Length: 358
Image (cartoon, rainbow, N blue to C red; front, side, top):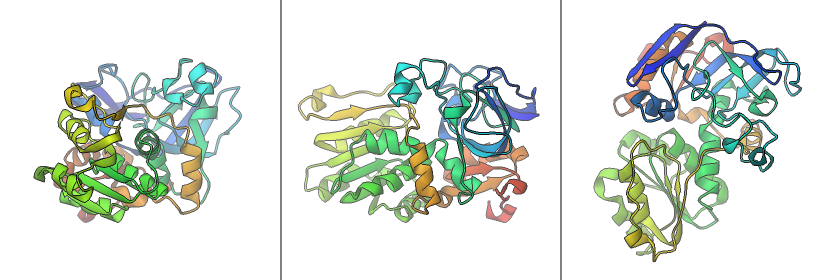
């Protein structure tokens, strides 16, 4: 089969690799019908995630069709259309039993495209299939469902829930890429007083308004002053960091009110300064986290009911064999306007966008 293989920092190739095979009775083999590219994949290619070694098939988000299952798998069977979660869960260890699947100590956690071969391929082996794939209702299309593999549960759990968003809050989301946009959409479920998006790109700020932001600010224009003005000098109740660079993390800590929350979602490849000389007296809560995906079934039900839209974030679609081109478009988002890039053949209901629309 073909797959996108990491060859070391700055290098990938779309190449032939062996087909995956069942290694454990809890495994499933899934034909990849739709897959997407994550900002974390770009961090990997830059060398920011050293656990990913040369030869690894990348990718941790997909929808597909089950083609084979191990002997103990009970929740799905061959022929089922499924969502492949970015997190694999053994279901038995202390953390899994508490719903903290991202911290699984029984052989799970973030595996796909990290410590085992991932989803940017024609087929993928999914460990612990009973908890790591979700059957898709017919009402949910593949190009919508793939956004539930990572960005929606990540934004909701690590941003909105960790940030303790409450009705009436002023919520600032710094970074209006896919994760930030998903944070805006899911923060809206809690009826905040206002949501303010901060980004460098005008196109992303426009997308933020479409998804529920009440106000936007350019990161080039000292948005701290806007937040101070809108909150009468108090600061935001919740600030969500969705970029992953030191400058935006430090910006978030300057925007938050005394007693407020900074919820860091971004994947950081460099150290960020924690200004405790300013923060110690403000009683600020700072949270980080890897997604657990405990919310995926709920988010899937909401999407099936039409209460959670994903298609608005998909700006570019390609057939699977155009993976390297899709990476180029996604990596140059400032020039291409890319938000979420989805790949998959038209036979699997993810239709290729005509070239002039890319």
